[in-house]
Length: 172
Image 1: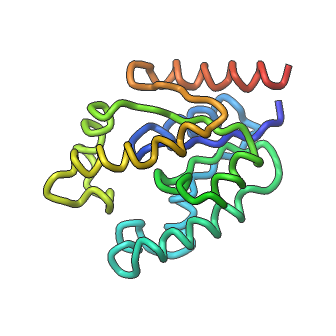
Image 2: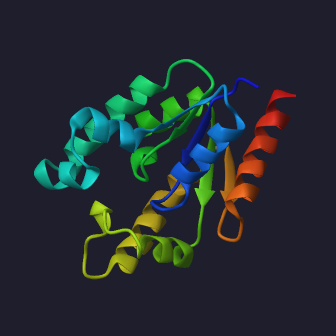
């Protein structure tokens, strides 16, 4: 198996967790979380980039990072929730590997996000409403992924096994 794997989805859909677990099962693969790369190279947390500069500035860093990491093979890439909105990012990622949309319903996402205070787009009076609007806005582009996995009722292990099965079927 030498196919690249790309994980897309809303914040708290499990991209980083699933990516890390996949990398444990696929030791020849390198796991890359683009948000972590941006934080390391900029020396700032994502929410600091948003507040100190702007979302547009962050999206430019995100674009540059995706272009940088989408080379070679045997990579598992987790991207930020909004990165797949950019048509250039989307085209790059769809050409680079098999893109999996980790879909979760609004209630599941909201529950997970309620335990995470470091999400800049959700620091509002009504984060559930903001999350709902984001999900509706992004869903059309997420649907362009090669494979959609509704993770709302799946365990992490079930999600990982589904992706591994899909990759194995592709490479057979």
